[in-house]
Length: 343
Ligand code: DAH
Image (cartoon, rainbow, N blue to C red; front, side):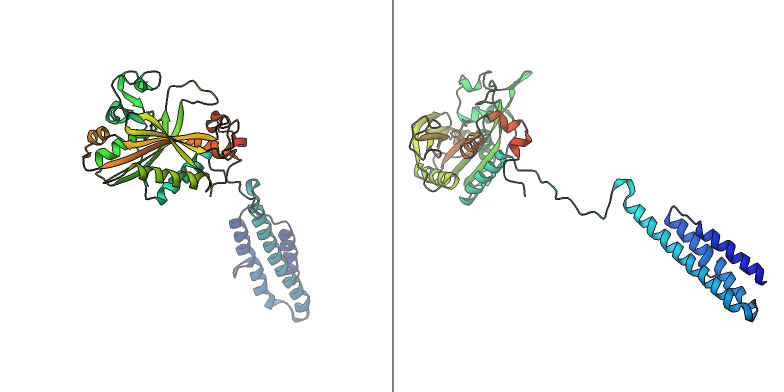
């Protein structure tokens, strides 16, 4: 019994030294094989009672060493395995995280949001309409004469097979859509992309962005328009900003005006940007023509309204001095990174 047992202990000890495992399941199988109640070492422990009393001390010591060694070996394997797991496929899950580089908001979006926010404070909500439109919503309802040059192939992108399908040339088309469906009071702004058949250069593009504003209610006057414009200009360009309205013409407004603001680059002193006039033009506006109200089903003897439209690129250029319009659509990261990070 006794030499046989010593032998067994030696054999097992050598076996334990060479143990390897490649998965958590394999390690568990080893633990069961050696250390569980019916495991090989437990069997030896059970046989221990047959050892002669004078040998018990020596054999007991060997047995205990074997048991400790096996336990340690299994612990080591477990540890190795969990480390291997963490670096699997080159990913070290214990490493500290990189700061994640967030993108930045597009300058046109920053300015559009700011315009929406300023008009929002005056009670305007946002309305949207389709970019692919028909003649009625872009021109007809807005009082354009049939032979108006804006309808010309040179300005408008038509779908060749059907000239009644076109890309909107201005966001005024959203006015038409909202007035057709809603009775006053109406107080909306319509931001969006518009298309014109222009040669692309640093100062013109075949698509750009506008914000339209429309207010229709009882007793809306030109004074209301002027006050809204002054509020907008001061909020957008600073409290010292002055505005100037010049008479103009649009088919859908009567009277019509263009608004200049005091040049925010030289403060009105005169500089190359404002061509030494001290003023820069930023938008078109006017009182909604009664014909337009009637075309959209609104009684022009009861209601009146004002409308205005501005190019977002133009406002953005004034705020950020972007010299080449093409920068806005080239997706050059070096350009885009200069604007505020997105939240
Ligand atoms: N739709 C005009 C354009 O694209 C801008 C405009 C001018 C809009 C006067 C208006 C307005 O609502 O009243 O040039």
